[in-house]
Image (cartoon, rainbow, N blue to C red; front, side, top):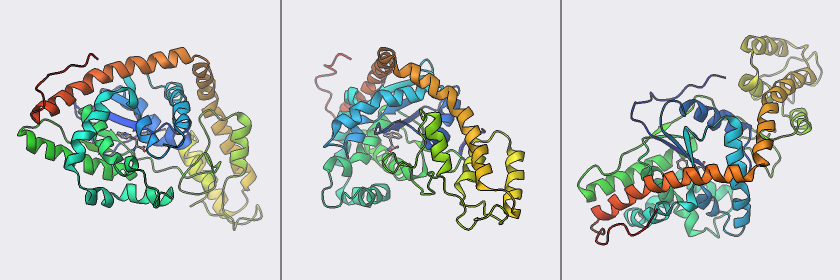
Length: 348
Ligand code: TRP
C-alpha cells in the first residue's frame, strides 16, 4: 500500500499526533494513520500521544473505560510496526506541562471563538452533549494546542476533521509570540494522508465499536469473515447476472485499500459492472486479503498484550522523554509571561 502525503517534509520537521484511547484501533486507523506513521518514523522525530485526558472530556462519567484502553492502543501501535526506538509513545495525563499550558492558553481564547470551532460543534451534536456539555470538552481545542506546541511540533498528521484544531493552535501560537515579543512557539502545518477515509462496513461514514461496523486490528478470523459477509454492497445488485455498482460499494472500497494487486481489482470492477460477478465472490476475495493482512498483526498484538510489563515500560520511557521536552516549553512560556520568578522547582 502506497502512502503519499499532502506536503513535503522538511529536514527539521518534528511530528506530533495523538489518539484518544477509547477503544482498540481498527482498519480505518490502519489506513488513515498507522501506516503513514510507520513510514514517517524513519524520516523525522515523531511523538505519538495517547490522549487520555482528551478522551476523558466526554468520558468523565466512565474514566475506567479510558484507562482500560491505554495499553490496547500501545499494543496496536507496536503490532503495526511503530518502533519505540524511533517513535516516542507518551501518555498525556503523565505529562504535567500538558495540563499546565492550557491554563495559560485559555486566557487567550474567547468563549465565542471556542463556540465557532466546527469540529467541536459537530461532535457536540453527534454525541448528544448539547444539554450537558462538559467544560473540558468545550475547551479541548486549547488542550490540543498545548499538546502540539509543548512538543514544538511543526507537522501534525491528522484527518481533515482536525484542521480546525490546528488553525486554533496557530492562533494561540501567534498570540503567545506577540506577548513574548519573540518567536517562542512555532506554527504547525497539517499532514494529510492521501488515502481517503475508509467507510464503515455498513457503508456509514463513521466506524464505531458500539455500532459493530468496524474491523479491529485484533479481530479473529471469524470476526473478519462475519464483518465482510455483512458488508454493504449495491442493493440494486440482486442476481449475479445483474450489472452492479462499484461506487459506494464497501467491498470495492476495501479491495481498493487492501488488495495487493491493483490490476486484479480493476478487472473485478469491470466484471462486476458488466454483470456476472456475484457479491459472494467479491466478498470471498476481500476476506482472503484481509485474513492475510491481519493474521500477523493479530499475532503480534496478542504477544504484546500478554506482556503488559513491556507495554508499560515502553510507555514509561516515552513519557519520561516527553516530560523533559514539554517542560522546556512550559518554562519558556512561563518566563516570557514574567512568571518565572521561582524557576523550575519540579524534578522531572
Ligand atoms: N483530537 C485527536 C483525535 O481525536 C487526538 C489528539 C489529541 C491529537 N491531541 C492531539 C491529534 C495532538 C494531533 C495532535 O483524533
